[in-house]
Amino acid sequence: MRPLLLLPFLAVVASAQPSPLPRAEQQMAAAVLPLPAEMRAGATVMGYREPGKLVVLREGTNGMHCLALYVERADFHVACYHKGLEPFMARGRALRAEGVTGAQVDSVRFREVRANKLAMPAMASLYSITAKKEHFDATTNRVTGGGQLAVIYVPNATPESTGVTAQPRPDGPWIMFPGTLKAHIMMVGTMAP
Image 1: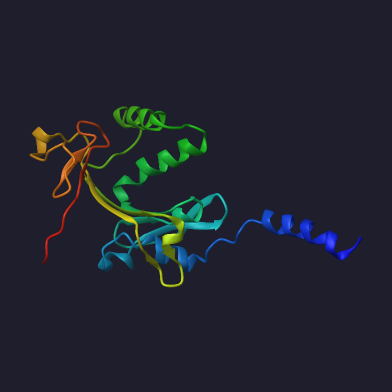
Image 2: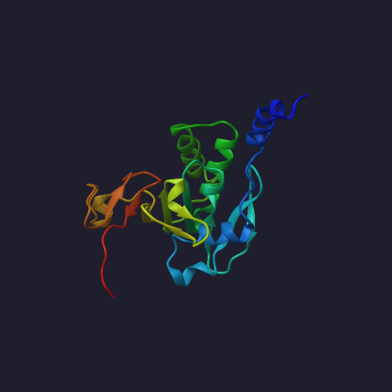
């Protein structure tokens, strides 16, 4: 076989190889980005040591759990939430791994919470960052052009029970999914210390 004929074959083989996973240290640094700086060092971090298997990369001390989901997603997405939400979130991941999709994931989880088979906290925080993959610079551990989110889960909360509107607004808090187990107060706006 002539050497030039091998080039297309080698290109196909090279492109079929999965890209290597980011090092655990890089995953941990990226996963905690949504948290306030003072909470990052104490967070439990979950990421990937092998494709498709989310594992604990570092045990934490402050009750926050962060996931390096960007490793396997088409976009850059990292999320951190209070340990009280872990059973609910873990059940969602397990259901999706079983092939359950869309609204059915919540239908199953809600049914299990109401049957006292799945724990849901009275209140818990969640922070996340979502951006295009190319907006994350692994060398500097910085994200540009992404959307940050901070919410407080308050299951079954309503405007009547909290005094917080259910109408989305750009300048203050509002309740998303009011009256459901996934009710959460969207935190919007800034206030200088």
